Image 1 (cartoon, one colour):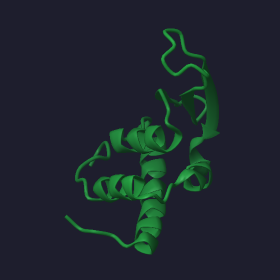
Image 2 (tube, one colour; image 1 turned 180 degrees about the horizontal axis):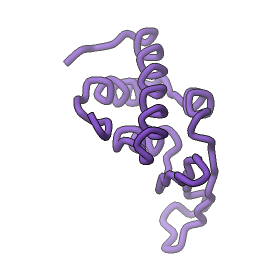
Image 3 (spheres, rainbow, N blue to C red; image 1 turned 60 degrees about the horizontal axis):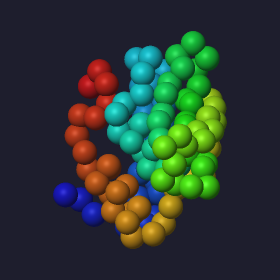
Length: 114
């Protein structure tokens, strides 16, 4: 397993997101690791790709009561081709998140069609 420095991690994540975006547009669906990255960064309950509109819909629980049986899910829509911008600005820098990103970068064969 390769360990990335913080600076190298940011560069590698940006590059990885660009690959995810290109493959999402090419294959019509996001890679599982792309979905996992979005869920992680936004604490999302779900992520859905709308191929017809070329947007990624992210559902986030915004209920004040996190144990609610019927949570308030707010859906945010982002253009997939701008993921480098909206996803890049959500990267976190605490040790838990850096470990998550490092493990994500070390995974193999997570992109559909490869």
